[in-house]
Image (cartoon, rainbow, N blue to C red):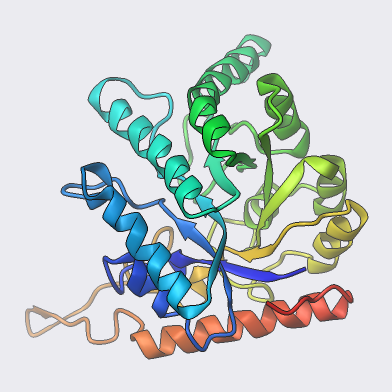
Length: 319
């Protein structure tokens, strides 16, 4: 199994995707998950005719330094929304799939979303239909580019704040498979997020084995089971043995891809925000964020953590 991590590891250190790729030089990683997650914002180059330059910048940096994008993550947004906000989100999502085709990225992770409301049988049917309808909008560009969509498991509570809806479908392997089978397309598969699963409290081994050949990608992250904090393995309560044995017994052939960018946390990163402080009436923030060089060392440590995990199970492959 080869190691990979997300370009979110360097989110906030540059607006250019090419620079985010360059920051990985010397960390050990050679395979990257290109994140489009934060591309929807005011004056985003990804939302206008500059988007092709955005994509080219990422591709040129990767080619120059010998990196490869093994997967991607679609933009954040409300897939059950309406009006202009939904139109922007849909356009950005379609564009992210198109970008994967241009950069020869074989798969992109897309979130399903619960429609809210009491989790009755009818609510479950509506969840399948509404999420399936959104994925169906992506099928033409998926078929044209050959890019697969991986639907990711969620969890009922990402942060300690109580939501009105105490369920968040799909948060189990069974619910994830039900949605994939409802869509019923050969380019639609599963991504298993170990952080979400740890918050949900599901059996990681049984879940991964249940997904079996449908599992084409993973997000490896840890937490204390209370919120989706995206810390590194060994920083939380996730049982890594259950994850690894599950991947092996499921015959998983994909990348061991981290989503553990909070191994060192900047001050304003969800869901844990650093307390602010003032001195003589002036806000002091000299130590609010992690300097770039320390961040690069943390990412290098993340690579060594992954190498250790895979080596212990006899499946580490060099990049």
